[in-house]
Image 1 (tube, one colour):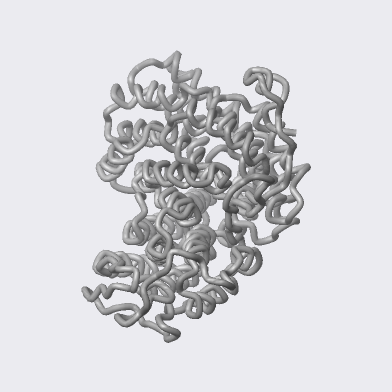
Image 2: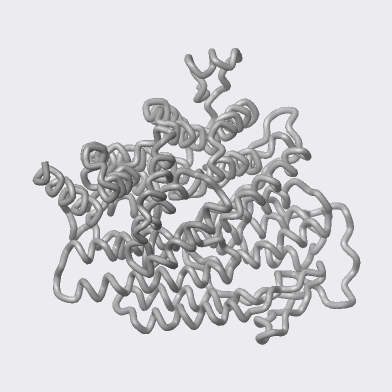
Length: 547
C-alpha cells in the first residue's frame, strides 16, 4: 500500500500505488539511502544500483591506460581524457595538515580513524580511473557491447569499484559504467565519512557525460553528488535535468525530494514525494515521504508509512535502513525503549550499520547507560568521524566526568574542525556542520559566520535553528528569536530546537515563553542531549525560583 492511503489519497483524488520493496535516504541528520535498479513496465532507462557496503577499502591509485597513476605533485593538475583538470591540491594539503595536527593531539581509538582518513585523503588528487593519454581515441556516443551492469556494486562496494576500474580500462566508452563508478565514490564517501572521494566522483561523472552528453545516469549521479556536498540548488537542477530524460529515474526522483527538503521548500517537497510515489513506489520513496510528513508535524503518518515500508523490506540493507528511520522517529518523540528496539532490529540485519549504532548510543545515553553509549559511539567514530557523532561523543565524555574526560572531549571537538577542513577541500559546503558544532564548542563568531553563510544558501528548519543558536551565543538574542520561531513553525517536533528557543526566550526576558519551551523540550525527549538537557533543567529551576 502506498503512503497516500485514506486522507492523502482522497485529497489527491487518485488511488494509492502498491508497496514494493526496493533499496533505500532523506536529508540532513539522516542517512542517505541508495536507490534501486527496478524499472517498471513502460519506464525508460533504468536506475543503477547504488552500493551499500561499508567495509574499509584498500587505498588505491586510480589507473590510467591500465597503469597505476600516483597523485599529481602540488600544483600540477594534469587533465584526463575527458578534459577534466583536477583541482589544485593546495586546499587539500592544508586540510591534511590540520587533520594531522588533530590526529597528533588525539589518542586511543581516534589515532586509527585519523590514520585511515589521512591515508584515503592522500589519494584524492589522483586522476579519474581509466583516463587516457593524448593518443586516446575519441569518445563514442554509445555504450559498447559488454557494458558493465550497475548491479556489480550491489555487494561488496570496494570489490565492485575494483571491478569497475578493470572494466573501464577495457571499455572506456561505457557511459553507464562511468556513471556507476561516480555514484560508487559518492556512496564510499557517505559510508566512510570520507569527503576526499567527491572529486573522484565528479571526474567519473563528467567522463560519463563526455561519452554521452545528457545521459540520465550521470545527471542523476551529479544530483546525488551535489546533495552529498550540500549543494542542494545544484542537486535540484541536476535531478530535474535527469527527470526530463527519464521521468521514472528513482535516484533523480528521490534526490529531488531531498533537495527541496534541505532548501526548506516543504510544500514542494510534499508534492515531489507524491509524484515519486506515483511513479516509483518503494522503500526509497516511502522513507522520504515519511520524513516530509515528520517535518510538518504529522508523526502518526510518518510512523505508519515507515512501518509499511519495513513490512515490505526484503533485503538486509532495506531492513536496516527502515528500522533505523523508525528508531530515529521514536527517539525524536522521547520513546527511548522503542528506539532501542528498532535499532536492535536494524543491527540484527546489518551489524555494521553506522546510523543504527549512532542512534543506539544516543538512546543508551538517554536511558542512563552512559558507559555503553560511549563504547558504541567510539565504534562509530573509528569508522566514520563525522561532526555529529564526534560532538556527541565529546559531550558524553563531559557528562561522564572521569579522569581525562575533559581532554578526551576536546580531542573530539578538534577532530570536528579538522574534518571540516577536509570536507571543504572535497568541495563540501560544511557551514551547517561547522555552525552547530562550534557554537557550543568553539569560536562563537566563526559559528555565526558559518550559519549566516548557510542561511544564504537555504532556509530549512535546521538552518534556522543553527542561525538562531549562533546568534544567541553571540549575544544577539532579539535577532535570534526570529529564527528560533521559524525553526519551530512547521510543526516539526525536535527537543533541541525547543531547548534553543527556550534559552533564547529566557535571554530576551520572556520568562513565561521560556518556561513553556523548555518544559516542552524535556517532555518531548528528556534525554535529547546530555549537556543540553542538563542546561534546560537548570534554566527551568532558575526560572521557577525567580517566580
